[in-house]
Every structure is written in structure tokens, then in C-alpha cells.
Length: 439
Image 1 (cartoon, helix red, strand yellow):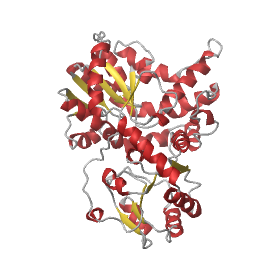
Image 2 (cartoon, rainbow, N blue to C red; image 1 turned 45 degrees about the vertical axis):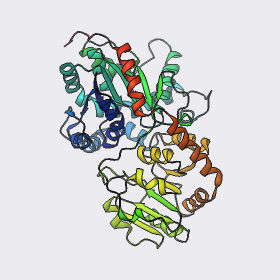
Image 3 (cartoon, rainbow, N blue to C red; image 1 turned 180 degrees about the vertical axis):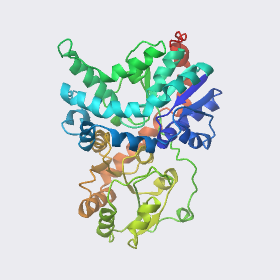
Image 4 (cartoon, one colour; image 1 turned 90 degrees about the vertical axis):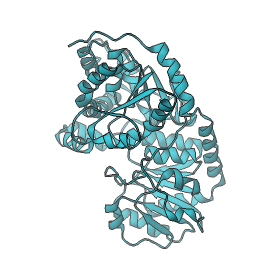
């Protein structure tokens, strides 16, 4: 069969889809990856076939411009995205749902602007590419809604591929629940209106499949899939970090427990950004200078220069291949990114998350409920707090045992190779004829 892969337009999201794309390739299927032009190298360097769609500018440039032009209301929402949203980040079954004003604010001020920024400019190119090639299956990264529209336009089966905890399904369910209780005429649905507008141009009727896919592929253990949909397909997280070289120092066993601290991608990348100011990072290094450990601190070049001298127990590096370094680690401190988080889970390493990402509170709650790690916001991450957390990660046998159990659970999940066979069967069952071309 033919499989079209549509990542959300950031390099880390391309990496998230590479193992599954290659599993489909090695199972004998044709695979193409439709991406923004600035991601072509990330796709082709992974040995996959790329199809350029969308703008010539980079995702970073477009994001920065749109943020400068965004409304004061949206800017305020970004500054305090979690305010009043505690129920959204509650991992327990039977949680309370968000109210109308809360969930509408999140959708209209956060979700929809990001969705438009990332999808509008590639929608027409993507539908044209899909119509020319006629895929049987479309795999689209979470938030890459254009992939769902393209699939429906050509009658292909399609699945949403998660990269983290599924906060977006929870948000949509809460929105629809709150909307149903509104009086007639007072039930705006901005996300539906946007998707319906695009879908109608290509002869596609709106359905919730355009929001959540016909089914969902989830690469995290059960503890990180609260109230998962019945059609969710679990798959093992398999790390792909892009081109990487094993550093020479990794050949020798560490003289003390090794701790990795990373606040960017696992390979040098201009998208890497620190959740902490450099001065705070220096304070943390001073606070842990006497801890018996080998701290491997991976930083992008600019931050590495600003940090300057580091304590004797710290090795300062520019990048590390996570999948090679983490199996040698007793703990990891990171910013909650997809690869740091997934690799730590896979290798059973206790972790400390320091993150301000929108999905961080739910990820925090799931991690702490599993007893496999600790979490704090960047505002809480000062020297004493990080030192206390590190000492607990290194000294608490329960944390280590729980992290190891999660690693075993992840390795027992279906591999991408296993999932490739399931996807072939599902695509055959879900395929439909192409819709009329529309305008």
C-alpha cells in the first residue's frame, strides 16, 4: 500500500514518525513524507522520500511573526495557559470536565492559532500531492490536521500519531461536553468552523475524524494514556535522534553515578531553547557541585559559552545521542521534550522534568502518579530544589524500581514492525473512494 506521512512542522515531530515510517518501508510499502521545505533535510537524511508542501520560510520565523501580530488576548493566554485548567491535567478516572468559558478560551486563544499557523499554508499543496499520489493510508502527527483533510479528500484511511500525553483529545471532549449544555445559538465551535471551511473546499464533509483521526497511535505506556480512546493503538517508543556520533568518553564506565541534564534536542539544533535563565543554571551547578555523580550537561553552543566554568563533577557537552547515553545513566534532568521523556521511559531511568510546555502539567501528573520521577516548573527550579530532587532520584530505590517497571512495560508494547501489519489491515478496512474534487 501507499502511506503518506504528515508531520507537524517541527524537526522533533519528524523524528517521532521516522521509526514507524521505516517499519512500513521494510514491510514492503511505499512511504512518502509531506513536510515544509525547511524539513526536507531532516526527512531525506533519515533515508525517507520527502514531498515539499507549504511555505519556504522556517517554522521558527513564521511562529515568531505570528506571535508579534497576535492579539493581546492570545498573548495573555500564552502567558498563563494553565490558569483554571486543573481538571484538564488531572490523570484520574472520573475527573471533572472543564467548563465552557475555560475550554473555549483554550481552543480559541491557543489551539486554533497554532493549528492555523502550522496547517493553513500547507493545506492546498498537501491535498494536491495526495490527489496526485493517491495514498491508501495517511499518518498525521498530532496537530497536523491538514493530514486528516487530505486523507478524507482521497478516501484514504488515516490515523493521528501522538508524540506525548493526549491532552488534545481531553480538550476536545471537554469542549463538546460543555457546548452541548449551551443554549441554541450560543454554541460556537471555532475549531470545527476552521476545519469545515477547508474541508468543504475539497468536497469533504466535517466529522470528528478531522480532529482526532479515525484511530490514534500512542507511543507511551498505559500510565501516560489516561482515558484513552477505545480505538487507540499502543506502540513502543523507538528513539530516532537524527545523525549522531557516540562520543569517546562514553566507552569508559563512569566513576560515579551518571546523570544527564539536557534542555534541548539530543542533537545540536537551532530550535533548542532553555527553560531556565543561564544564571539559574549556574546556581544549580553550584548547588550540586558536591554531589557524588558525573553530571553530563548538554547545552546548545550559545548557552554553553554563557555558562562558562563548571564544577569538577560536570562534563559540559554540546550534544549527546540520548539512546546511547541514557542506558548508562542513573537519572536524567530535562525539559520534558518528546525524546528525552520517551528515551528515559524506555530505558527505565528516573527523571526530573523542568518544563513550561502546555502539556507539561498532565505529563507531570502521570509521571508522579507512576512513582517513576519528579517534576517542577522552571520557576520552582532553583539550586536547593534541584539538588533535593537529584538526591532523591539517586537515592530512592522505589523511584528506580518504578522507572525500571515502566521500561519493561514499554518494551512489551507492540513494536513499530508489529504495528505495520495492523495498519495494513486497518487501512484495507477503512479505505473509501475519493470524494469529488470540489473547488
